Length: 197
Image (tube, rainbow, N blue to C red):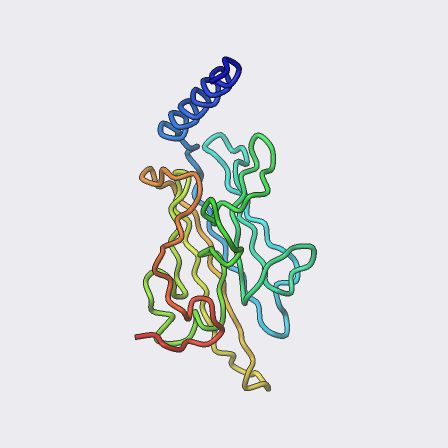
């Protein structure tokens, strides 16, 4: 093997080892707990993206949780509601940390909710239902989408929703991106709750 290839391989191997050590020993910032609730409906959807700053213990913004819907302007969300987590320090990183790496589809996220995720018995699923727990970067993010029964709606198909978003410190969350469980049921990707046990 020519000498220049040996040198290139040595550089690549040392870079890979260094990256592995940094990932293994990575420590994430301690965050201040944050919690927000958004209410919306068919008539008044989440047209603007809601930005929830996540700050470290020094009060500096380190992450942003952005939530919206398929009606949100200037952003590609889908479903009834969707949230994404972004690192903003040292600069904004456009990779949604709720997506595992590598991923084949933007559907591979626990941050998106479809109508099937609110219907019984799918809503009660502890992983894929209407309540999602995502452990990533030293924090636990909880996303809960609930349907609120309207008290005076004229439309029987009217859908009034509440999206609860919270983040707390979770030292056991060592991964840099979320894990998408491999056993997602078929209804997780469908609009109807069919085939659920």
